[in-house]
Image 1 (tube, rainbow, N blue to C red):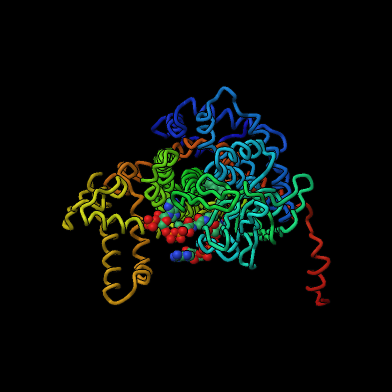
Image 2 (image 1 turned 90 degrees about the vertical axis):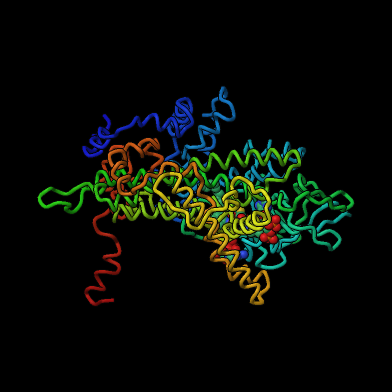
Length: 615
Ligand SMILES: CC/C=C\C/C=C\C/C=C\CCCC(=O)SCCNC(=O)CCNC(=O)[C@H](O)C(C)(C)COP(=O)(O)OP(=O)(O)OC[C@H]1O[C@@H](n2cnc3c(N)ncnc32)[C@H](O)[C@@H]1OP(=O)(O)O
Ligand SMILES: Cc1cc2nc3c(=O)[nH]c(=O)nc-3n(C[C@H](O)[C@H](O)[C@H](O)COP(=O)(O)OP(=O)(O)OC[C@H]3O[C@@H](n4cnc5c(N)ncnc54)[C@H](O)[C@@H]3O)c2cc1C
């Protein structure tokens, strides 16, 4: 018999003014896609051994990792077995695109995440056809587990500053990988410490003493039978972190480690047997895996934000507190306009990020298809837009998830609410795959170039076209959708123009271009933040904000129900569909090992002698 649903949530669901299932179908990409997703979730989540008897927050650092590996193998097998052979690749992708299935199993991400998120994409994007065929067979069957090892102890942002060397030896037709300094150690790659046995290493290639730039190499670093580190390889775990504590981020040092010539991934650049180096058509093609992951991150943020606001809105419908009017009883905290202000922007942002992610994914697919035909024309724009959207969506999601947590008071601070863990996952994305400030400055670099082109009369790409609009500074903004869109474009134009004017002022004062850039960089970052506003996203804005909050209020629970996250995926005492928050908080509290006995042994060992003055 299912547990009784909280009365307030029942009332909220009765009040809803739209068809929740229709919105769920829209978000999934149609009723069939919803059905496919639910079928996949039903199958996988019914697998034995996927869930923790003891909440993982009560395990040690080492036990958490070992438990996560146990679950990862069960989960991966279940996902493989759940695949419907009659579905197309696209249908399969759609079924997982919106699903946060892995979140039901891993509160702090999986030790396999880098294998799927970067190792496989790096092979697909950087290997030549023969290499792709061999390595994809092994990687897709999980015969090997890989990661992506680029960041070093001393360098993360500045890829051209990476110190790991790959020196070609034409006599043996091998590359010698070496970490010349401590700061050259690879540091951060997920799964690197104890899980993976292969990685794509980004290293500085030298041939006959000449630098050939940063190139990708596929490197085995653990024996496939014994899992022992190979000779010349130093490995370890980097330690406990704010989050990602089951991702097994590690360090790796090379000591003159030799690999065969065919282990350099040679889609873009090649090294022939005699050491002849054939350059890539564009050295930045080596950075392609990062562009792909930045695109994936935008969609990931939409889903994680949707999860957080689902928890917070349902809790806010159940929680009653204080007094809005004398003698009227305690209201639902969702009736406070401040609570609506905190949470409804999160619902809207999640939808905006979903639409943006779909648009960006289509752009990525088009540019990638062009690259296959040797057309690199739109690569710079894709890079600039992917940098901006990854930075803006991860920053906004981190702010909005933290706001969802604090809007739930003390219970939002409980790990059993899952809001702290969701924050730990999303805030990491502000740093990984390119620290956000650095990425915004990459976008700014493109904006400045575009404005210079516009001022010399050149045509601009669609995403930069606002920089060629002769917009009168005396534009009258009305509250219509068009007025708001025009307003945003005017502000965005003004910020780029102001940053550029500032740089020119510094150059006139005698500074070099690099120093002028640095002095104007705060304005340049601000200018980039406005690039991501596009007409489609803000067409829904109405003219008065508070009215809008009132219109959304009766539909708030319906809107988060439409995200259709099952309780196992929310993994939260505050966000369950039935709203039994107090019973769940108590159930989870009683799982604490400290509650196994009324008097803890520390009383007799320390407290009692201390209080009796005997210590
Ligand atoms: C919800 C989560 C979902 C999925 C993720 C799940 C699990 C994964 C978890 C964690 C994974 C994290 C993995 C990592 O963090 S991997 C490491 C990531 N590291 C970085 O991103 C490093 C960032 N740094 C850079 O990208 C570069 O150093 C740089 C800042 C771009 C500067 O490069 P540099 O070579 O010095 O170039 P510049 O001299 O500055 O010239 C810029 C020039 O190059 C063009 N450019 C730069 N990058 C690219 C690119 N990627 N593609 C195309 N073009 C590029 C740029 O446009 C400019 O061109 P100009 O014409 O202006 O010269
Ligand atoms: C959870 C997590 C998982 C990760 N997983 C991986 C992985 O699997 N594989 C991998 O290779 N890496 C991984 N990383 C590493 C990640 O890619 C780097 O942390 C990131 O690229 C930033 O580099 P850094 O840490 O060296 O910081 P730095 O580059 O030292 O930056 C530090 C600060 O300096 C500022 N700064 C640097 N350069 C500039 C500039 N040009 N202009 C203005 N400001 C600047 C930055 O904005 C930042 O605030 C992971 C990181 C995290 C947090």
